[in-house]
Length: 408
Ligand SMILES: Nc1ncnc2c1ncn2[C@@H]1O[C@H](COP(=O)(O)OP(=O)(O)OP(=O)(O)O)[C@@H](O)[C@H]1O
Ligand SMILES: O=C(CO)[C@H](O)[C@H](O)COP(=O)(O)O
Image (cartoon, rainbow, N blue to C red; front, top):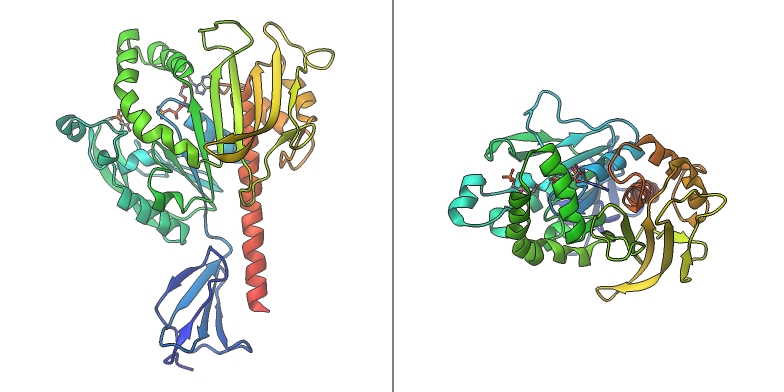
């Protein structure tokens, strides 16, 4: 039967894309809808009384989109390695592609770096006197179109910003994965892109700690001078404050990294106080809690079951507000002496979204060589990785249910 009359459609769920093309040779079911199935998609056309003709295509396999925001050198790559590991398998640059690609692909995840949407290359920024953090140096229209295309299950030709040459290289093909992560300076800056995110994270590294990490990496590993590191941080600060930092108000989870409060006037930045700020009421995300959900708790676990050397470890948990929104905050100050004993702490945390007892500890032990594995940065990054896996599984299950309902 040719589709020549009037059709309209209610999207089955938010994963459905709507197009105005029509298809012929389809039959109506009892609800006066035309259903058209392929292995991955269900397309539905329904009659309506007005003269609009629309088809929706829904897929149980369209990507779940995650945003990770942070300044440069604040642990995004380390976090991504932990996240990918939760899903199993290693993440690698696209095979046979540009060796300077910023993309990492594993069986489940594709992580793209938003530096690839710099519209001005290094020279262009120098000429115009803008930093890479300035929105004028970035193409948000293209970012939005391409993230939307991936979310709709459509491959893209994404530009590459080459950090070695400072130039924009020819684009690379990115196919829709199961989980699509956009990491970089501005994943939550543009509202259109923000609205495409199923979950968002902000790594909020305090200035003191950022400075300590920069010195460790750029001085020890890259041979930069102390003065040049200081100058680079100072030069970025106004734009960081104006364009990057405000994004944290939109994040579903913020990992805040501060100097310890266990050592008076500490300025070494080695022992850290890390806060996991979890927004309440986010779909498919149940915040992790310590002992008793909603209570305010302070816990020093050091003793018979947890070895602690100076300055010890202190956990805190409780409700709070963050940019006017209800959150619950889990905090760890201090560092672990023996990572295998983390199981004792894990057994007191709930809503971890683990698949078996001890999974957090197992993940942390597996990557004990990653930066932050002995403190709250590694612990909370691992926990958020597990929460993202859980969120992904819930979204896929919900879509599958919607498809079943539509078929019935
Ligand atoms: N949790 C941590 N504890 C201590 N140091 C850390 C931690 N995370 C990152 N670092 C330090 O910061 C450096 C940068 O980390 P990473 O490469 O993960 O950050 P990034 O945000 O991806 O950086 P860039 O955007 O510049 O590539 C590491 O080499 C390490 O020195
Ligand atoms: O803030 C950054 C994000 O990683 C970089 O400084 C920005 O992408 C510019 O890169 P480069 O310094 O290699 O020209």
